[in-house]
Length: 351
Image 1 (cartoon, rainbow, N blue to C red):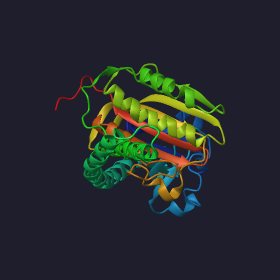
Image 2: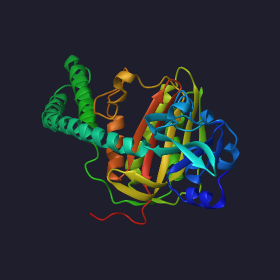
Image 3: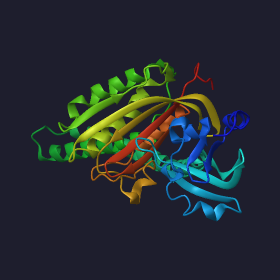
């Protein structure tokens, strides 16, 4: 354990620092390191360094005469999301003891910002194309529907031709609804303060009748989250899509649909960092999203479902963007999580 002076200096750093002695045991870990690994620093004293960073390097002796930096290392902590970090290992003498200094940098936020920006630009391009096509199709559909309704007035319900006209009318109406969904909300209503858990409760009421018997709802709330300025109806539609997707993914296997709320501090959304951000995660234990479509799930018309339209997630992402928020996804067999981030603002932004 370093003396008081060194301890105070290292504790004050925002960089995660771990000092390992010649026996390769952890003798010091500052608060920043404890936050990354989600452990109490004092509890790790005397533990072998590979307990925290398994497989980082084969042997520490290879770094005795040089500094080594490992990029794109993934920290896996039970019960928590995986975290990408960079780690620099340096030979370092502390209190006349030879050892190694580990400096760990959380690169997850940087990766997320870059990926978010890239995907958003791709999404905007594909979304613009889809909306342009939808707009061009909408007018002819209205003409076909109007002409069909005029013809329906000339025939009675018993006429053979009436049955065909009914089919045309129903199919055109279905296409019209599909086009409207592709165009998305035309204008976001004025936002008002709403409780995030009231939003979830309302969505769960909507899906109660369609929930499979083998699917169970598990709620994990942070009751301290204040009200959030939102377009309630639009946010219902966004969250409803995520909840319905989760339940549909577990129709065969069953399991728990877990909805969790938390607050994140100093969280970056787009180019802006907010002091506080509310998080809603929807986790299912279903079959997961195929790798072949995962990177495109927020694009219009992309779906892995046989009867899906591929519009639910793009519409949900649009709604979150209108709230300066974001939806991110991660998926593997038995563990698919959609996470919604919403900035906690004191008042509605004025255009």
